[in-house]
Structures are given as structure tokens and as C-alpha cells.
Image (cartoon, rainbow, N blue to C red; front, top):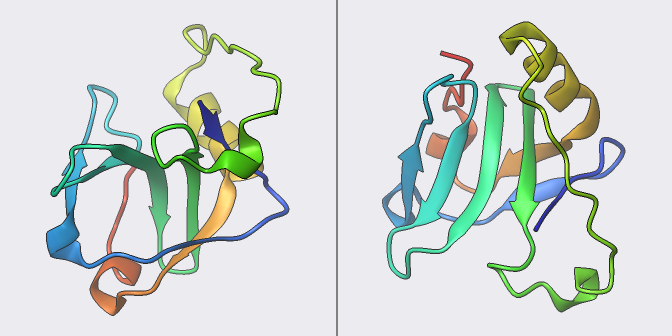
Length: 109
């Protein structure tokens, strides 16, 4: 289960060599996977001051969020532009502790 809050803040504390970046077919976001344990950490989109993410709270064992009722979503009918706009509105503003990651481009590509 992923979670995001357009009014919140996420800080991802990792080094570039800790993560594998994967892009699905639409290439609108980078999915960050822990290089050490294989856990999907977050989906991240944007660059510079405009980076947003949705975090995998189950995979990261973030117990504070376990009681939130899941709300399955279906975004198959969205155009690429609609998907990007929704994410910028609803995903959580995100920063990185590592300067190299903070200066990365996380799609759309």
C-alpha cells in the first residue's frame, strides 16, 4: 500500500548507490528499489524544487499507517498528461538527504 499527502513532506534518506531506479512503460516516474534488500521504497516524479512521491508504507513497515483503510484506485483511463497533473496535486512534496539524488530528474521522460 502506498500513501501520499499533497500537503505533507517526505524526506528520502538514501545514497544513490543504495537505490535501483526503475521506469515502467509510460516513464512518468522512477520507482525506487532498495539495492540491498529489494524492497520497493517509493515512486518519485519531478526535478529540482518540484519533486513528489508516494511511499510504500507496507514494504517499509511504517506501522503508523497500517490502520488506514485501503482505497484501491484505477487510473487506466488517464492520459499521460492527466496522470502527471494528478500526481503533482496529490503526491507528497519530496526532498532527498543526498545532494546527488536531490539534483536528479525523476521523469516524466
